[in-house]
Image (tube, rainbow, N blue to C red; front, top):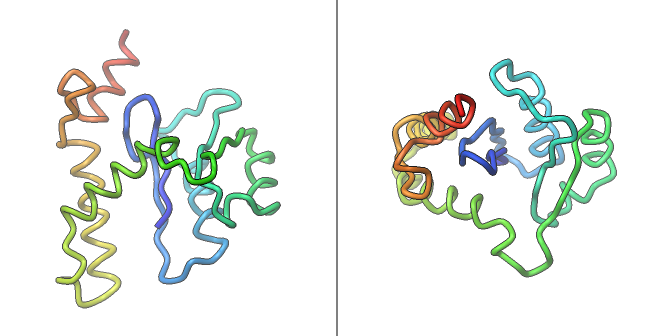
Length: 142
């Protein structure tokens, strides 16, 4: 699973799931992000990732360049650089009991529902006790 998390709001903007860890897991996530009508990216927005082979690939880097996206990566062996993503995945794993899913489709459905919950109903103490979507709307009104 690959996700794009807004650094300002904590909102999961898009995600892509696959049964296999192939290059398309990273590229499809970017393509889905660009197709989103509700997501308005700032000029030269940055995509931050770890240094996995998908993200260091010339194919992925060319896709970012084609879409006017910059790239930053975590320092090797430094999980703090990617803490918001690690936190999201930790909450996801705590909430979605994958062992209870008897099919990929059921797991995918549970994850999709969790992302809706995470963005719209899960309050974050560091964001004035607002959900990521509420906080985004708050920032846009300010």
